[in-house]
Image (cartoon, rainbow, N blue to C red; front, side, top):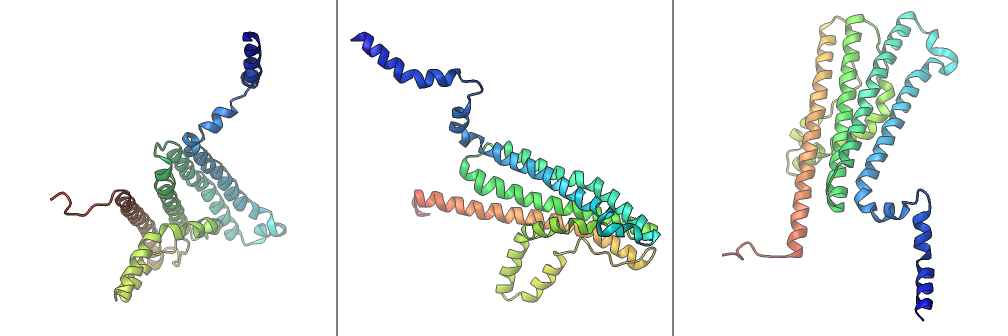
Length: 265
C-alpha cells in the first residue's frame, strides 16, 4: 500500500518535476509576480514610445530632403540654408525631447505605490508632467530657432515637424488652467477668464517678427516667455489633479468608515 501511495504521489508530482527541469522556465513566477511588475511593464511601454517618437521625428525632418521629387533643393538658396539649419537644430532637439519620455519611463518603473495609487495618481501625474516638459522643450528650441532667424535673417524652419506632438500634449498641459477658467466663467468673471486664457495659451510655433527689428526682438522675447507660461500651466495642472485625487481619496476613506466632525467631542 505504501508503494502504491508513493507511486501515486510521484505521478501527481511529475508535472512539477518536469516543469522544474525545463530550460528558461520562469513563466509561472513572471505571471504570479505580475502585480509587483506592472509599474516596470508600463515604464517599458514609455521606453519603447521614446524610441518610436525619436525615429518619427528624425524621419519627419530628413524625409523632406527627398520628398516631392527633391522640391526642397529647388527653392532659393536662402530657404535651403535656413531649412538645413532647422533640420540640424531639430535633430539635436529630438534627443533631449525623447529623453523626457525615457525619464518618465524610469519614474514610473521605480514607483513603489500600490495598484490604485499607481493607476490613479502616479501615472496620470507622470503623463501630465511629460506633456508639460515636452511642450516646454519644444517651445525652448522654437525660441532658439527664432533667435537664429532674427540674427541671420534666414527662415530657420523645422518646428512644423513637431506640431503633431504639440497638439497631442497641449490639451493635457492646459487642463488645470482651463478648469479654473471654466469655474471663473460660471462665477460671472467671464471677461477676466478670457483674458487669462489667452495669456496662458501661447502659440509656441509662430514667429511674427522680422530680423533686426523691434517687432522681431519682441517676438523672440515672447517666445521665451511662452516657455515659462507652459511650465506654469504644468504646475497648476499637477497641483489641481493632486488636490482632486486627495479629495477623492479622503471621501473613499470616509465612506469606508464614516464619522461626524463632532464625533470625538
